[in-house]
Amino acid sequence: WTLQFIAVQSPDEVRRDIPAGSRYMLTRGPMPETGFVYVVLTEEQARQLERQEPLSELVIVGRVRTGRSHYLGNPVLTLVEVASR
Image 1: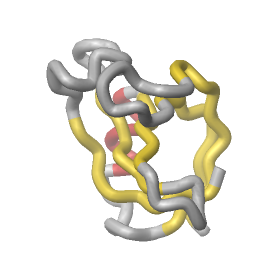
Image 2: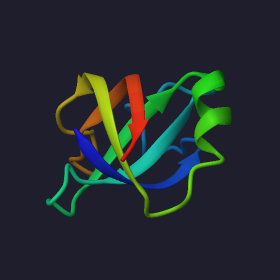
Image 3: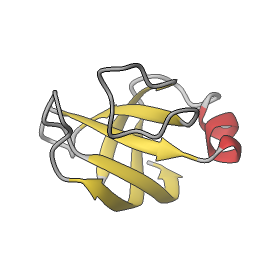
Image 4: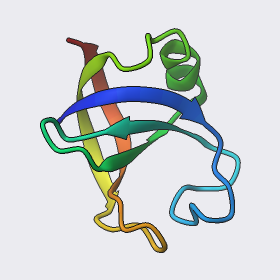
């Protein structure tokens, strides 16, 4: 997927599909779509992506955890691979 990076964040009670204690990447896409996609990260991935420039494009390989999140209806993926575009 080609996604636009927004931020690395921690889940709140609205994002029940993201495991408690984990971090996720908030993104827009897949490009050229403008919806949001949540990408669950390991701690190592989160540290790496915290240095990513906001609004930059990433190409990712992810495993779908949920096609439509509980409250917001956005896809939730687990990150497998990532590359800057």
